[in-house]
Amino acid sequence: MRYEYEMRRIGTTIRLVALTCALSLGLSGCRHKAVVPPLPAISQPVDLETPPAPDKPEMVEAPPAKLPPPPTAAAASKPRRERRKTTKTAATPATTNPPVQVASAETPSPEETAIGALSSGGDSSPRAQQEAADLIASIEKRLNALPAQKAEAEKTQISKIKNFQRQAQDALTSGDAEGAKTLATKAKLLLDDLEK
Image (cartoon, rainbow, N blue to C red; front, side, top):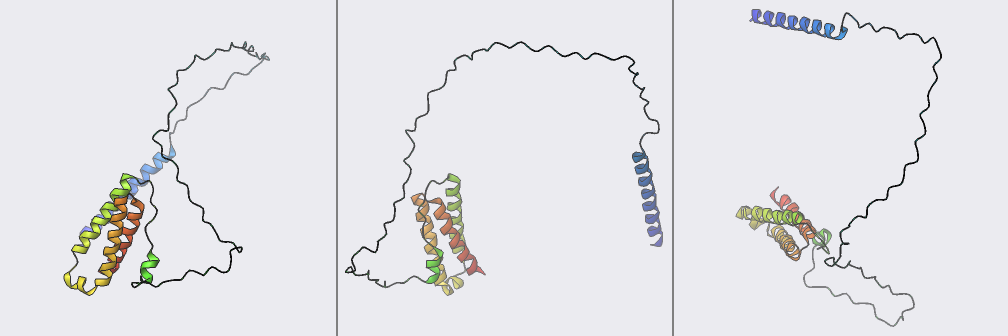
């Protein structure tokens, strides 16, 4: 054992010495240097020649280019315009009754109202639609994989998850891929909390 240790130490020392020699030779460079003969001395002054000014070149007219016809915007859609919200001024008569708030039979929990609702949608790419569809499908698989005992114990949470999943599917069907992704992400996060 001691013999092996000594042999390793000697081998390491030899390698270190060889590396040091190689580096010192490599860094020192060439022993002989190239000798460059000195330039001959200028004994007489030399006149500098200035190049003649170029004649003004003639202007060449560009040949007429045949351009394609200008594109038409026949397939372009009209830009959406937002409606302005009208505000009531102080000039409205005081005789109008304020709106009466009616409590519904089923009041949403603060968690549901804080999470949000469907967005207005807009142009969505096929990639965004595919991502939203994949996210909805993965939520469905994870819900189906939950143990029955866990599903029974967490009925309200699963109900919220399924509600967001259904809303995400409806948004995807209507063409709102971003809204679908948002709702599916909310369902995924609730499902993540449920599985902890």
